[in-house]
Length: 271
Picture 1 (cartoon, rainbow, N blue to C red):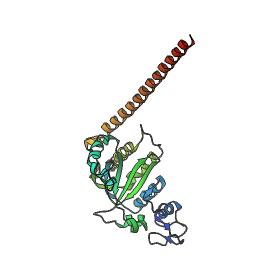
Picture 2: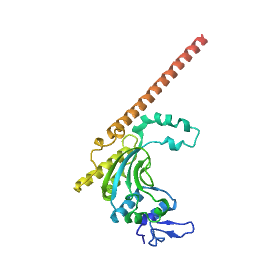
Picture 3: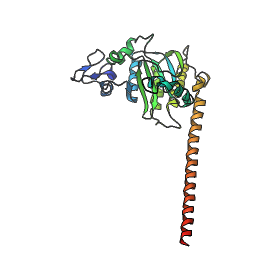
Picture 4: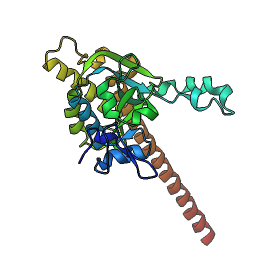
């Protein structure tokens, strides 16, 4: 027997079961129990799909979505270390790394900070402890994953305010989940842009009064324009390959020259 919120069941150390207030028992979905018993905010692909399906079944509509490129906030990471005085310099030096920021999509789980009934039921017991405000979907080297977050990190972003149905996310999510991570052809930016544009196309196909823009290159901040970032990434990879090849070539030539000098020296000694 499954609970009405199968993703969000969990067990205490004493073996008692807790869920969304509907008497979850030992028949709850084991994937949901694994998610919460570890107090993790992370969902693997199966858990993410199940969570979005639960929201769809409950009639939930996201009030918008945020596309974000996020780098390292050195002010937060180094504020309690001896490097604190030079943090502004480090942050400034990291500016050229914008094309290599991590890209993700965030979907608000509430309206004006309030979690409505469909979201509360899908989250169940978990919300009591963590009170998340956003569902984050992004690509890692292990694959697509979801995360429940209480706030938005600093970064470059594009915010769309308007209804987003969970069903518009599911189809693309399942399709993309079959593709493995690749530094060159399929990473976080590819996934983020593809999901954003597919959601926009699904909205347009249903002839909604308001939809996200389908051409992200026309609306995203210039620092994270997909065509520019992807070009920079490819040029950087090309430079890395050429640099490595050049270094290897010079090293081999150096070894050959040393070998030739050694042979010449041995010949002179032999005379």
